[in-house]
Image (cartoon, rainbow, N blue to C red; front, side):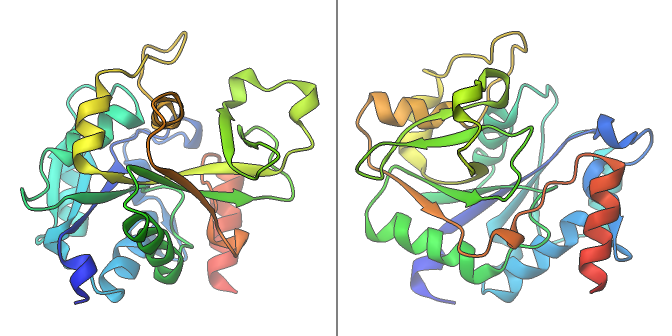
Length: 250
């Protein structure tokens, strides 16, 4: 294993119910695309890239026993008893990573089935080489309808993230989104978590709030754009599940 990766952790968010997929009895990440659970693709890619299972923490919640049974031993499992948003899920997983891990990657278990490790490794390298507090992976989509946007200034640096609930017509031309894939310096993450404000109307704490926290505090921050936008694909509806299945069969 590369020395840079030896003390680098990964937290995969896999606690969701998947209500829009009508997941009555099955965790969202166990729905299948091309005969394999959604989450299995990212797990295989991480291990193929050189990470050990004991560096990877799965944050589980809904029907967590089914996830553990299907994925098996070797990984770290963290139970999110109260599901209070993606930032809270990341905090839950971070607490279970080995003590010597100074940085960690956060990935959604339901939109990462098409990621290539090379893309994640590029984000990790940017994060470490710049000694960043936080680094995010963005993606430019042809049709980002229903998603928030990444807003950059004239110098190309991110100035804010606008969530889908706050989108206005003048921002519709922007195609760049936040994939919700983050690298964090662990101490920075823990020190700044308590500053996050809950999402209005939801009472949950979202990962994008860390971006605002980083900008306000002038923390070391980079937004790296995914070179191949086809590597990010969100699965939130039966139609998207069917499309992911079709793409994996090609």
